[in-house]
Structure formats: C-alpha cells, structure tokens
Image (tube, rainbow, N blue to C red; front, side, top):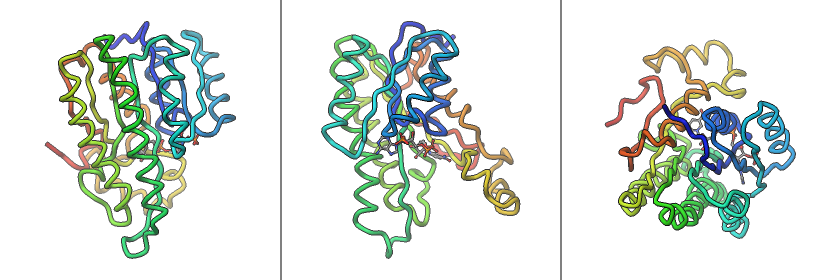
Length: 250
Ligand code: NAP
C-alpha cells in the first residue's frame, strides 16, 4: 500500500525540518524527487544524503519563492528533468510574527508572497500537465492556526487559511481528471526551535495537546505520503489535521 514507485515529486522547502521528512517519506515509498529550496548548499547536502540511501536518483532545483520569475520556472524545470510530474508538495513557509498593531507591511507582504502566492503559481503550473496525464496529487502544508487563528500571526494565519480555500477551489476544478488537491495541517511539531524551549514552557504547550506531546516531522511526512498515494484517489479538497487532538476540526 501507498507505493509511489515510478512517481515524480516536487517538494518545496525540502531541506527544512518538516520538508526533509516529507522528502524521506516520499522517497521511502519509491518516488523520485526534485528537492527545492532557496539555499543551494543546504539542498545539495540533503540530496546527497538522500541519494546515498539508494533508490531513485533525486535532483535539486534551487528556487527563491519570493522571486516571481524563479517560481514560474520551477515546475517547468521539474518537468524538463522528469518528463512528467505526479506529485507537488507545497511545503515551504516562513513566519514574520508580530501583533497586528506592530505588523509591518513588508512582514505581511513576505508571508503572503512566499506562503500563499508562490503556492498558487506552482499549483497553476502543475495543473495542466497533471490534467493531461489524468493523474496528479497536490498536497499543501497549512497549519492549525489557519483554522483557529493565533495572536501575532495575522499574516501567517491569513496565508494558511487562504491555502485551504485555494485547495478546495482547485480540487473542484481538477477532480474529474484524476487530480486531487489536499492540505496537511500540522499542529505543534517538535523542531530545533521547540527543543530549545525551557521545560516549563514545553510542559505548558504539551498540556494543551490531548496526545500530551508535540508531533514529529515524520508524522507529517506520513500524512503527505498517504495523500500522495494512488489509494487516496477519492480524497480531495480536504485537510488532514496532524495535531495530536489539539484542535478537533470538522
Ligand atoms: P523550516 O525548517 O524553517 O523550513 C522552511 C523551508 O522553507 C526551508 O526548507 C526553506 O528553504 C524554505 N523556504 C523559506 N523561505 C524560502 C524562499 N524564499 N524560497 C524557497 N524556499 C524557502 O520550517 P518547518 O517547520 O519545516 O515548516 C515547513 C512547513 O510546515 C511550513 O509551511 C510551515 O508553515 C508548516 N508548519 C510548521 C509547523 C511547525 O511546528 N514547525 C507547524 C505548522 C505548520 P531554504 O532554507 O533553502 O530557503
């Protein structure tokens, strides 16, 4: 089950904390990956590590998602490399947090451009070849805060909620062509940043989560691999929440 052998996938933010585990999960199921990010050195190191594990010959494509022209070239570059694109994972994301009254225009703009607009451009570019192939999986990483809101994150929550609406619209446009579009919404995921928090703060965070712990990036990767699989063909326009029960959303 969930075998991705023979499938080609483009993953943005592939060398990040969650993106690298999404990449490992897809590669582990047999997919061949185009790993994308803005930091070429980080990306190359990760690609070499992934390729050393055997399996498919993965490639890296550097792209700054804040630069429109580079974003427009990313899907065509993956298509040039692979000849087809079966899976697109919009994972890259940034935060520029501040309370509403102090949020600067540039913090709003940067988050909307990278988290929302770039995903729109990539989905638009992937839609045509996937429709022609009568197969495609578009998985977008949102966040629990896109559904619940979060103080200090008007920009980030707006982008994540926007991705959900975009995904539902695209899902309706592409469903009859065998292409699905879904979101995976992580809650609190354990990262280097959360590891560095004092124990008291970690305990306070964990007490808000019915599972009693933060999630692992691998658990997000597994959700993406499932939605990318052939077995998930009848799931579209949905959000799979990976949050330990922290927010139980319809
Ligand atoms: P991360 O470790 O900071 O990784 C972010 C990734 O985005 C990096 O690979 C980075 O690549 C890429 N990126 C940032 N700016 C970019 C740009 N201008 N152009 C191209 N790539 C860019 O963050 P993460 O925690 O793994 O987050 C991954 C996704 O999960 C995000 O969408 C985030 O909103 C979501 N999420 C995270 C959590 C959590 O608890 N961590 C919770 C909910 C949702 P480069 O360094 O190469 O630029």
